[in-house]
Image (cartoon, rainbow, N blue to C red; front, top):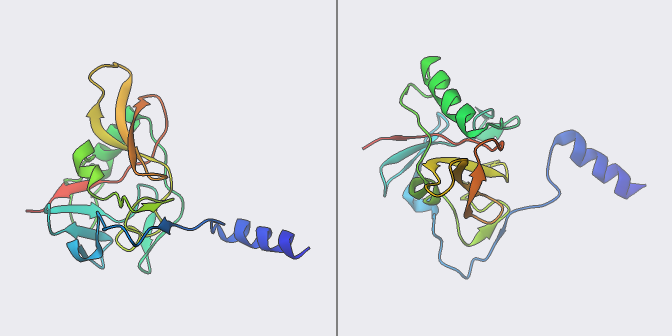
Length: 172
């Protein structure tokens, strides 16, 4: 009975039964000290000069957390969503958000962590799913590259598949 009640509580609150696992004996690839956390739901990578939305599209920045569920997009849908997002006013006073390229997206992956493989202080409540990059697969006309936060690895995804989107902008 207690086990059923606990499962019901997790289902109702939307909390995961699993938690991020990190091997702190390994050097951080996305350490806290490179990020400037802004109260407006953005974070700046002081090394690359990139500004990131702390939440995936569909989530909302509330009380220093990402609330609600992310939205999923096909590759074309992701490109269209970015244009519509900027045209509707963007976020945090900026209207130049874009899909990151694969190299940029890989800079926020925390290789010493899994489930999610991301700096969870800079990017709280990150859905453990794939995130589109702007890079098409040169060898497969129906493919584009994504990074999956279960393990932080990149994959080719079919452009008709549905994955998450995290936006970035240049802030040099």
